[in-house]
Length: 223
Image (cartoon, rainbow, N blue to C red; front, top):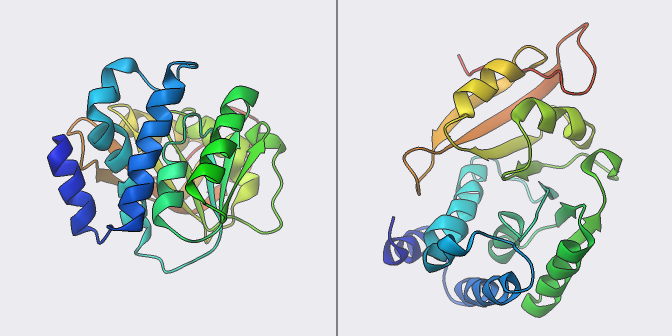
């Protein structure tokens, strides 16, 4: 996907005007900050719209099958992908979870600069985060293997929660490992930005009976 194709994809999804202006500003903020801390690989800067913006925004497109304006929790937000992109496009509560203080401060600065009053940052390990109610959506990009993600974050969800987890070529292997401990309704979506990447979508997540312990998770492929 070229940069022009990435912008065209966003327009086709109904995003324009103020949303595109926020995304333009977000790109500037990330590139500027990247000179101070390594948020993204420098080699991806010429491909920001395809590699980071649309790669994140496609999760929102997948979430639309479920009409829900509940909390979106983005785990290990790092440089703001996908969380800040989702916040630019979705006017509903969003929580960015990030352990590193410098990156958390950057995320807070972006929220203020972009006027994303519906978004907030929690600087903490995911396993130490508590919510008033289960998240409606959970995302994590370049965070941890699937089984580990479920281990540390399953307390943030219920069986109605929708997980949207971008993966590279490891998607199928991670599912095989995860299913040893977790069961859910899983399916794998092809990434619109990279033929070698996929997105694991899961709902109804629950631990298999008699299985417990960190690093021992499971799931099943949609039948």
